[in-house]
Image 1 (cartoon, helix red, strand yellow):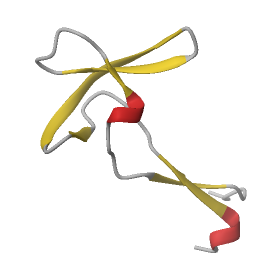
Image 2: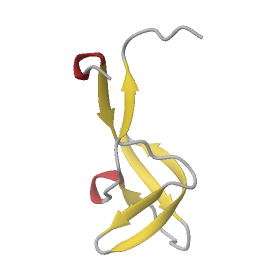
Image 3: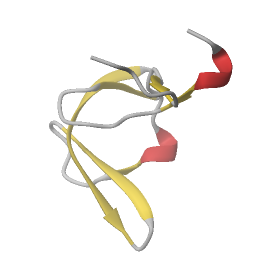
Length: 67
């Protein structure tokens, strides 16, 4: 894949495994509150700011793909 035709960015969706500090957690759902992306994790009461999480970035292509 040509690096000029794609970009990488974190993608938070239900079921995604993320790292919070040294522990691995699973995303329950996400919300946007006052322009801040908050991630609810399975087993946690309060949401976590997405900036505090580490996740393998997804690759998106900028060129049209024919099917």
